[in-house]
Length: 288
Image (cartoon, rainbow, N blue to C red; front, side, top):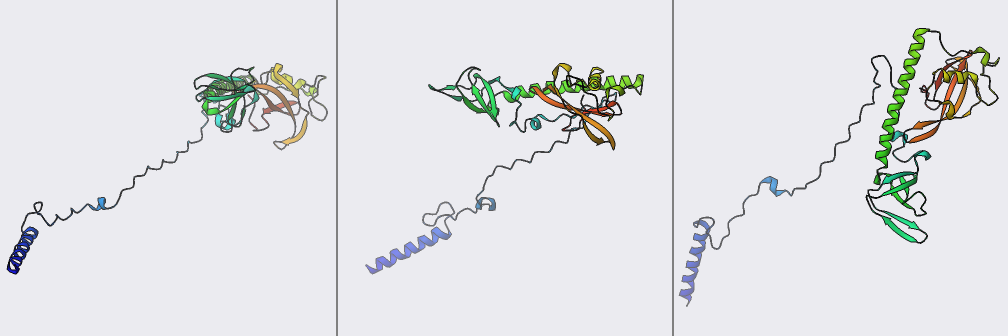
């Protein structure tokens, strides 16, 4: 029995030695093939990340385009600046019909309903970048939606482009008229010494207007101010402009803006019985 065990042990040892060192890889019975060496890249687990978007390239400040005749278009604020990134709109922008890109839930005394996406409604006003929505102008139902969930930005942008084009054309027409007047008579300007007080301030008419300022408007020195759109006249203020004694007189009037009529203020600078310039007091830019 012992001899049989020893014989079996010898055969088993010989088989294992043969299987380990002589049998070709892939045909061994007991000893597994050694694992394949993985490439260095495969040993490390990959982590896929979405590349961070490149920072937006800052657009260069627009350079005023000078026409062949020397006219420089007036500086006009971008729409995003005028609306403070779509959070401020003049009251005259409402009510307006808008198209909804998302559903709007309406609430009313008797319950609620929903206006589906794609339907039209009326924006009655805005609170920051949120519009107050109603199905009709007379309806008592109210809902809210973001400005950009409607086509209002598209409407306003189209209106802004028309307004901007109109302002440039108006300023160019006024500039050409001034050039023609200057060419005909370099000293030609609205000068009315009899229309000013001994102090140099313009004389005020019974209705609050000023003959000197009216003559300036009628002569085309300014075109943005329409006589039938004047709301009220300011009081002359003594000041020093260009290092010279000057009287500044404001005129408050209605004019067209990027999304409807707005109230505006222009200021005439009066010196030595004539108007030397018209400006917007807020920005100092010339009034076209």
